[in-house]
Image 1 (cartoon, rainbow, N blue to C red):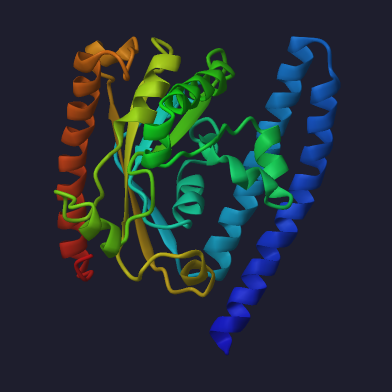
Image 2 (image 1 turned 60 degrees about the vertical axis):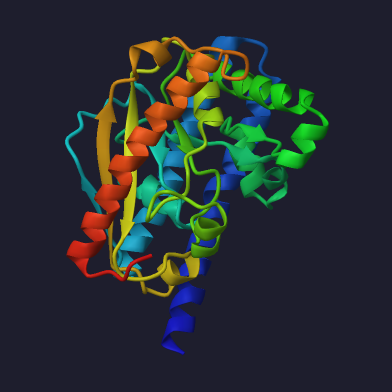
Length: 300
């Protein structure tokens, strides 16, 4: 009963905060769309970003005030709010997003995620994400891509168009490299060589590196460790998540990848991207194993 009341109260608070911030944000987005001068649109974009950071700040304060969840950022990093970063992270649950937002809000530029095209229809939030220039992508199955290889090129072109908006302004481009949330069933079905992770998918990361060639300051390698419960939005709102560790390593982009390349046509570039991500994933898997053992969490 108490858990149900906690969920209802926390969800209501987050919902009200979303409405309070999203409605004026959408109004400004309409103004931005109508402005004829790029400098004016950029000024509105900065204001929209500050409003989004305020929304995230209130949500994060609610998590601290009404749940036992404690988000601990671990790692040495000199954040630059004017920087341009590619953020790579493991993916466990939808609650990864509020955890990452709470850890990095106002420390680095606003995290922008690649979203499925269908999410633009989510009430209120879909339009807010659009107003904030979150890139929307169409996801195609392997079978569909085999039937129509041209779709793969369209995905990459959409990534380039999205990243072109970020080339001249501060940004943190967020990529869940596994492409989907980790589950034991997916882990088994995909024969992952890692104990706590799915295989990384290099295509999306390579597309960002190519689109932002030479313009990224660093890669932020992030590992989320949930030590108390199976993570979910419901578990977060019900107060079942305790300590959440956000491990951070700032990494230099390898010289042979920093200027981008043709992932589809250049086998050497493709192999270099895959080897780089696989090496990161070996380290990430080892870190997860160590931290889960230290905290007494059950094996995943």
